[in-house]
Image 1: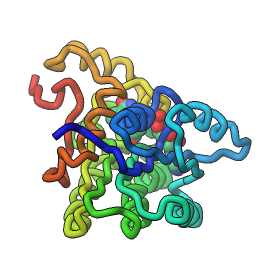
Image 2: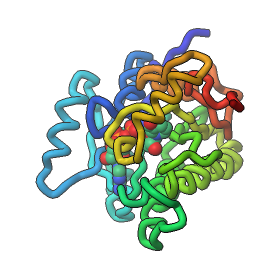
Image 3: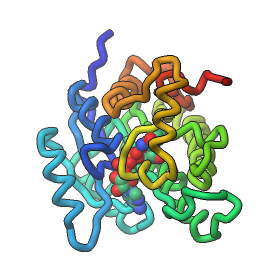
Image 4: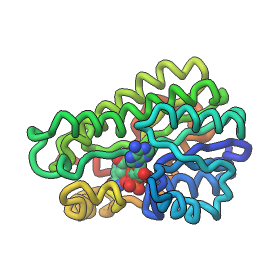
Length: 259
Ligand code: NAD
């Protein structure tokens, strides 16, 4: 069987610019034959919308919708539009996270209540609320994929509250996989190695993290958005029909190293 997403509709969240992991995923899903829909985080000036719209144009997205995951009304409107324009769909890519820059440097012990709530709401709860909204529209054989990082399992300096958010996200993957499995919807996460993006540049010392991986990882390099996109395409395809509730490391093997 070859990797083939022809006839599948994929809704991709989290594209901000051409460095976004979600952009790498959208391109690989499209290359495998999927029809693409895109949601973006709207801003008041509409600059973000324009930028993302221009970037994704080559993929001919058949849906392009605003969706701030902190806004229940907007999530409802987004999925009403998905239903109206697409009817059912097959693939949901959850590729977004946020924490205050102040909480991504220095000591975790100093995390504020509001900073903790916001990081967990945007970076973890959003998977559940999007799965909730998508569930009635997802076809049997459908797949949800989210993005996590090793900092949700081990202590990584400066990752701090985002590590706690990723731990919650990874456990959410397991609960959602258990509950959506009987409907033949699979839920998995990719734990990506460090990549320079808008979000990762907020984490103190991201370049040092990348250099460390280049020195230690079995493949002696970090990974690209395309490599993460390829793994996502696999997880969303029928080739992975027996895989659910898993965290797939796409990190040049860094995770296996003890020293
Ligand atoms: P990115 O900045 O390109 O993407 C983050 C996205 O989150 C942006 O598109 C942003 O608009 C979106 N977002 C933030 N708040 C939102 C909200 N309230 N509603 C809707 N969208 C919102 O950075 P990225 O590195 O591509 O991040 C994508 C995912 O990959 C994140 O979950 C991140 O934690 C994860 N990840 C990144 C790395 C890395 O090194 N870059 C490694 C492992 C995992």
